[in-house]
Image 1 (cartoon, rainbow, N blue to C red):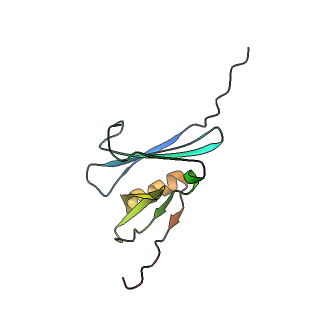
Image 2: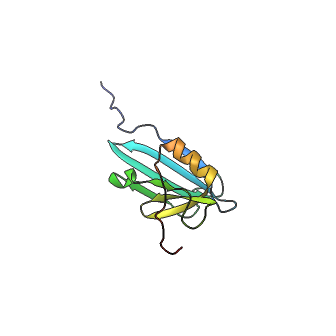
Image 3: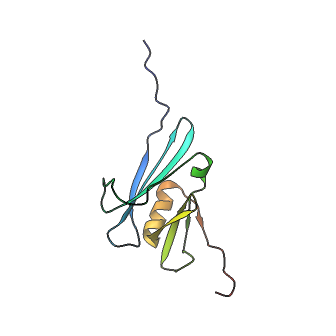
Length: 114
C-alpha cells in the first residue's frame, strides 16, 4: 500500500524585533500544493498566538512581499510590506528578515517637497 506524499514544503519561520518595544514579528513562509504562502503575526513572545495583526497571503500576493529600507517616515526604521499593509522594524531586523527569506529591498519613492 502506498502512503500519500505531502504536497507541503517545510516552512521557514523566524522572529524579528519591531520598532515597538516588547513586540516581535513572527514570519512564516512555505509552499503548499505548489502555491506560495506568507504569513506574519505580531506577538509579545514566541508561541503567543493571541497577539494582534495576523496577515496571511497566498499565491501571487505572497510573491509581492518586500522590505522598504529605510522607511519613508524615518531613516532609522524599515518596513515589511505585505498585502498593502506594513510592519515597522528596526533596520537590523529588516536586514536579517530580507536575508533569511530572500525578500527584495526597495527604496521608498521620493516625495516631492519633503
